[in-house]
Amino acid sequence: MDTQSSIDPFAVTSLEALAGLYGEVPERANLKVIKALDDVAKRFIAASPLCILATNSRRGLRATPRGDAPGFVVALPDGTLAMPDRRGNNRIEALRDIVETGGVALLFLAPGANESLRVNGTAHLTTDPALRAQLAYKGAEPATVIVITVAEVYMQCGRAMLRSGIWAGRPKPEGVPTAGEMIAAHTGGLVDPVAYDAEVAARGTSALY
Image (tube, rainbow, N blue to C red; front, side, top):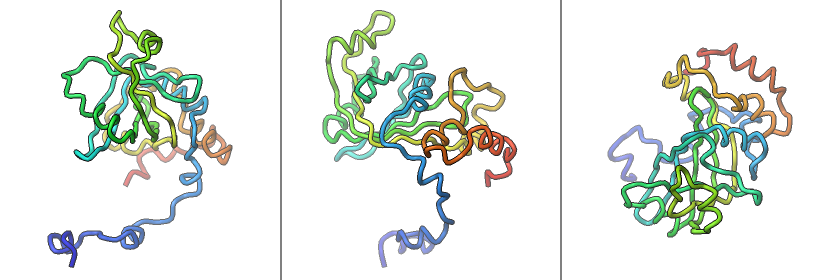
């Protein structure tokens, strides 16, 4: 008997057992993953003032909030993303992880928008003077800039935000693409964006549980 099963007789310890607890993945959920930033993803990132940055290393896993004025993470012409590392307490754990392994995952949030945007890829740190100057704020340049090479981009549906009620009563920020726009763009037009948004609105809270 494995360790988890000896502690919890109901532990799920195999991928087969896990799959048996859930239904089939909808086609559009599989097809919504794209390999590079498109205009719709860039619009969401430009409207986002908050991102959760996840990193890993031999020391373990970490997730840290990164925030600033909307659009603080910038899409560069070569398809990468640039995130300034603003002043902190100098523990620089996430930066150490990036130097050690380079693996990153990002979750972009836009207060008022139930959907979020997920970006997975690799990253490196740079002290490029031009990039640091571009990302300066109130005269302060970041010590380093995190440059993210994108491998996967996809929309996260709004159920978690709806369940939490975190944005309840708050309007969606101007410029944030709708769920329908994102899923249509990222599935190659598999859905009609207007119809999809109407479907989401009609479902309301009926499909949350």
